[in-house]
Length: 268
Ligand SMILES: Nc1ncnc2c1ncn2[C@@H]1O[C@H](COP(=O)(O)OP(=O)(O)OP(=O)(O)O)[C@@H](O)[C@H]1O
Ligand SMILES: [Mg+2]
View 1 (cartoon, rainbow, N blue to C red):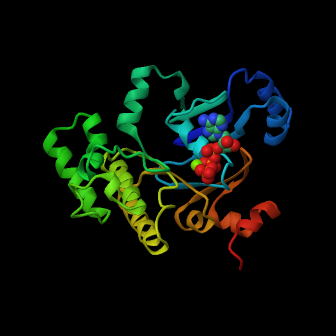
View 2: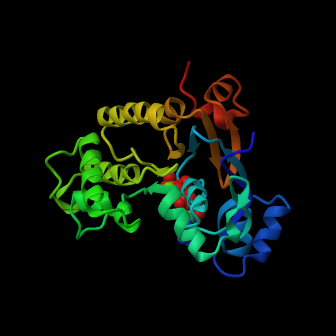
């Protein structure tokens, strides 16, 4: 089966003159060693991962392991130093600027870690943003934005501005904005991390229920293993910019590849 999305041997070194760092990574030096030797930050040290259509895949790992860097390669907010990003078996690094714009506008949407709301737009306008960029008719923008504001439990807050909302509420606005565009691929970076435990559970349940209807390809970043096990049909565990283990929640729980992975898992 061809994956919907595939990362092939992605190396991401931040900073100029990355050649030496790439060479060291390819020789098998760890992220820390490469950083010590070159002074450059390594985001990903040779990551391959695939994400199937219609599934929720979770990317999981500690802070700094490379989760946001990985997910940002998928819509090319970050370009790799080396490697390929494939969508429907096409390397999207070859896309022209207009193809890339179209991809971001029509096929992918993202819920950002830290929300990325526009402070001068109210809730309804923030939710409608993706539809506006896509130049949907005004009436549709308003109607669909309102639907999603209601669905994420923010009815009554349409005219409020981001600085009048709690962190959890802002996160919901970000979620509604991404879902309102109805794009086939959803990238969610710590989308529920800022929420209280109960609301977080509620949002997870809502996402699962929505996914039954919508069948999107979702890449969901989290540092919470329980969240990954609950939401994901596929889990990719990152450590120091490398994939430590990838597989179904069952496979990972049944046979963690090493103590590092085992340590994450809920105690039986
Ligand atoms: N723009 C950047 N410039 C330099 N280094 C960066 C940049 N973005 C990320 N990094 C480095 O890449 C590594 C991975 O960062 P990333 O943000 O992907 O981690 P993360 O797993 O998302 O962490 P968190 O859970 O804290 O969000 C870190 O070592 C970080 O310092
Ligand atoms: Mg992150």
